[in-house]
Image (cartoon, rainbow, N blue to C red; front, top):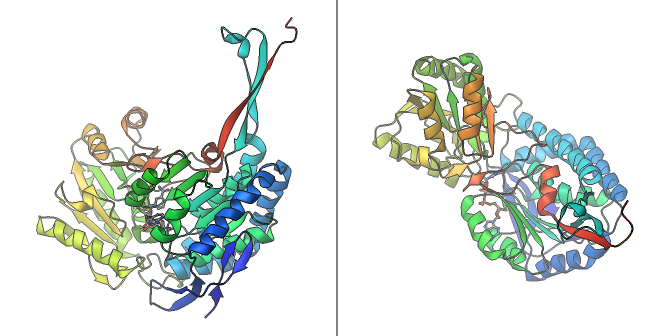
Length: 478
Ligand code: NAD
């Protein structure tokens, strides 16, 4: 079994404490990773702190070339990365390939963010009452060492969404990946070193969140904490981060509304895709479906047709659509929530069975409003469908959530699309597609418990930099 090191300031470090990474599908050993202790944590922070002033002053061209080289290397190793993502995270291989190509795009977008958005702007100081004799401009400066904490469901692209912008602005970084998917992160760190990241700038530390992630987040030498994961951990980190710059990309129970005038075939097709991608373990997974009463029955029939052809099983199989959940505990939690809704009157329309980590794609109706299946983030291949009398009720139900990441509306009515956009409390409203749509260039993030801050390289640089003003007094003005 291959043993993977930590990366501390670009150096590979092997420690005596290790952890075996297992496939969520069959428990097979994927590899063994080294775990960071107090010494390794201190060395990684000290390295980032020491190298920061030098890395911050590198030319933009130099950092753009690193990002472009990394994108090229990732292209060459795309299949190797896809296979590792599939093995560690249990992601169907075809989806894993999609994640690698998105990560390449995120690297390209980071290079563009560096060259196009790191400049500043001229200040119209003579429009201020006290600015008559002044001129000046403001410019972005890198904020300092970044701690990037990532979840298991997109182990490559979500890491790149943090590291790409960090490199773009000139911040060294420490990546703390999810315990379940540490090898992809190490491979990414090694690739970035090979792409030319200066000595000291790249650290990847594995271990448990509370013992590795939290002490780094608390350290004063870390200036930016960017976290993607559960709301519980996000809230905890928001309390320990103090005056650091932060971004929190958290969970959701995303909803979609299908209006009576919608293209129902398309809606059904997209709902099946959006509800079961990565076995429903996506922050913008399609969880709650509200259908206008005129199309409710037809939509259910079409969704059932779509679900019946899905293949559940081995993520390395080219034909698999739905792989395992990340671990049995997660699958058990979803099963308990499903059972509790059934006891309260909900009806399973298809699926509902679990075998270890494999959970059948499931459609449920008549779920009472107070059940976890509607209130919480299910994070499993379960979709809840509900009938609504009109669009007003649909928008009210969509908003009746502690989360607000994305929402989808299927309609031909431009006025409804506009109203939904105005009224829905979320980071994005997607018309004629599911909330699960995301392009990596968008300012992506949520409101309410779904988090604060936006990712997408052009926008992520906002929480990785600070503005500095340059003001000059004097000189003749015509
Ligand atoms: P998680 O919160 O359990 O873990 C995420 C990361 O936080 C891991 O690296 C973990 O080790 C670390 N962590 C845990 N406790 C910590 C602590 N005390 N201090 C510092 N770090 C700590 O989440 P998960 O199960 O890996 O991922 C699922 C969650 O992520 C879901 O809620 C999902 O919606 C969310 N998510 C959000 C987005 C988004 O962009 N909004 C994207 C993907 C996933």
